[in-house]
Image (cartoon, rainbow, N blue to C red; front, side):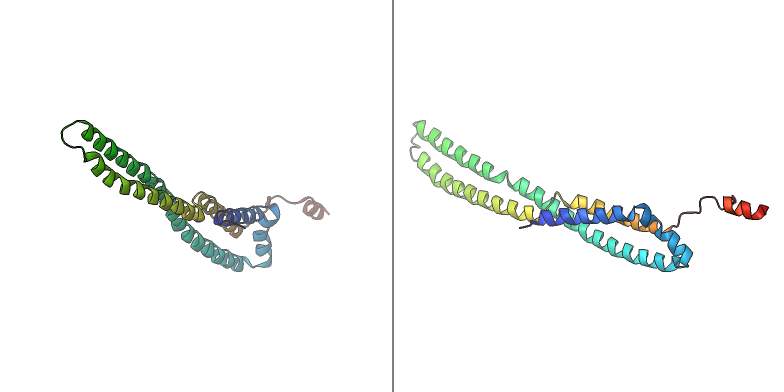
Length: 185
């Protein structure tokens, strides 16, 4: 079964392959063929339309990437809370035991501390479970994969735009060998 990260990674690979296809020597001839057929305006319109679609896809991917990164950062930040709450619980236990041991008539301080630290330990356990669930949800957002997809979309857009410009003839001013032979005869 594919994960969302697999899907985003595979989509990025597909987009990179499409860009590589448009960068082949054969594809680079498309503008020249369009020029020879008098179809440059149609090619330009098609390229512009595909460019707009790619732009819209990219515009949608950028906020998704930002959301995935923000969620990942939030989960990392929240990951500190269970240990902090556990530390507070341990500090309360230690303080109660210390106060009870001082002999100042605070013998029930240890019991009172346990009454506070017990719920804190439970909260820490619940936070741990919540962090695990949040990490699972963030992994579905695939924060590490979006950059590759956005870069691949940018490359495909550039490769597509290059199709609008025909390559100039090798040297139109210089007579060809067959042209020179015909003019001499």
